[in-house]
Image (cartoon, rainbow, N blue to C red):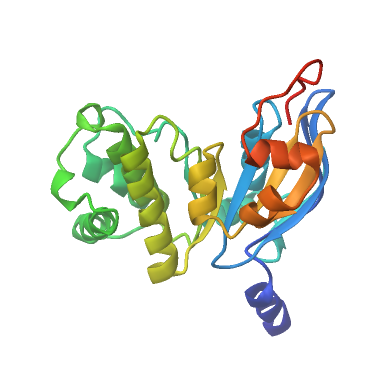
Length: 264
């Protein structure tokens, strides 16, 4: 037991091993292997249809991969029994692109929802925890707002607060900057960096916003819709300067010319 616990403490936050992702007979990603270290901000990049969101859904155990394994702190979420998988899933906080807030609940009730469902805390304790989370994302004065009253940036912040409700120190964000104006997106980037610095949170960020990628990520992987695999891994700025022409084209946001109009 002690050896297993020590190994878990030393393991990367997430390890993906020779993963194949798809639906039915359609393969989106194969031969995918990478680690996300604790306290790291890892970006998952790629063109539309390359499987970014599908990879995230496999990591959180929402879908089962066609082959391969995914380890959360050294424990397989693929091979885990149902109860163990649920426990691993509760250690992962997820913010979906839309924020996925419940329209009939106030902001405080939305953030409190995981605590209502999965804990035996008193209502006073749950409200206190939710208010503390709203303070962390600079939304402490908006607890009584309904989702329909929130701006896009506020919705994303609320989604991140709710993702942290169960004490998750691994957060997966699906297109956090999508639909935001440049200033709001930049403010959200700074909040993500602050949460990593102050709380040691590990982030996996699915995104196509290159400015955000260069600002917040430590490393990235680039998925390719043609080869159905990872074609680059490393620091975004280094890949932009020194990599294959296809990878540089993506990071420099260069259009395809002539007959070469295939997307990365």
